[in-house]
Image (tube, rainbow, N blue to C red):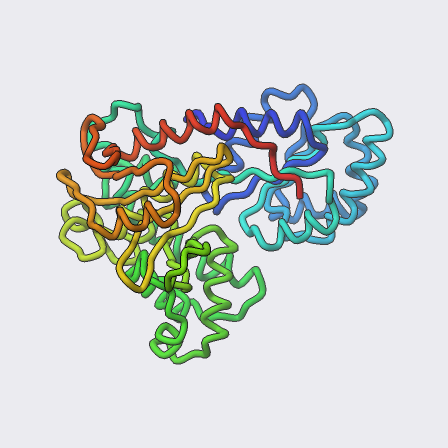
Length: 403
């Protein structure tokens, strides 16, 4: 098994909280990680709530879960049984009174809205949250990995079975099947009655407009649906951790700031699959290449800085930065992302850095060794930037989320 950076953090949270929610899209590796944790526990039990046989075991969930005293109980796809959360609260408190303070339940799920709503309502003060993304560059690649390896991860994306496929064609077939599964099974399971063809068309439109400002009325007109329906589609994809809404930076700078969020399909491999792009040459020859790379880099950075306040900056007069990170250390990183191997920044980037009070100005591009540019700009590739953020995070460890 590839070592996941979330494993140590998960172990820490299980030692502190009675329950931990491990979030992530399907096929990101949640079950594999949970089984690795299970192998290190003397007493543990794994329940896949998609199996009818398991659901029969839970006909009386309180009695069953209380019978697992002093065991770590792993509940997979727990969002499918929301009524369990009310039971879990009572069971946790009973087990706590018998001396089990932490490490009682590990809850796995792929729909954040359902899970976090239920957890915050039923398990307040008893649960922590951790997100497991598909493989990121710092997990899949060595720090000194060549550009070819980074490009392969960008083209295929980080879902393990896509990245590890023998050929590009096999990788693309896996991603096509993954998308079809979501459209035909997972999204309908959440309740909305959306035709799979309509949702696929919508998802493909988002891939074409990767990194663009969200224009709900334009999308609604293209799909011949209401603006409210488009908002619902976006909420569903964000809830499933397949889409990211990057909000604009807000502050009192006395300038007209853009108010609409940007939207990104979070996994670059899914962007390319939705557009039918199989190889690196196909991606580089498509207009989406630059913004696909931008979204890929943003996901690498946010995976290592999950508690950072992330936004983009843009004014009506041309000041612009692709990403603004407000870190728990008090630093503000202003980041520009380029696909060029000889990157430069515009005057608008310098204006943006001044407006937000940047403490660090970073230009991320597919370069070799890091090097400085004028006016304090640091040029580095995604792996270098991730290492810098990881070092910053280790120096300024924030408290874990407590729903």
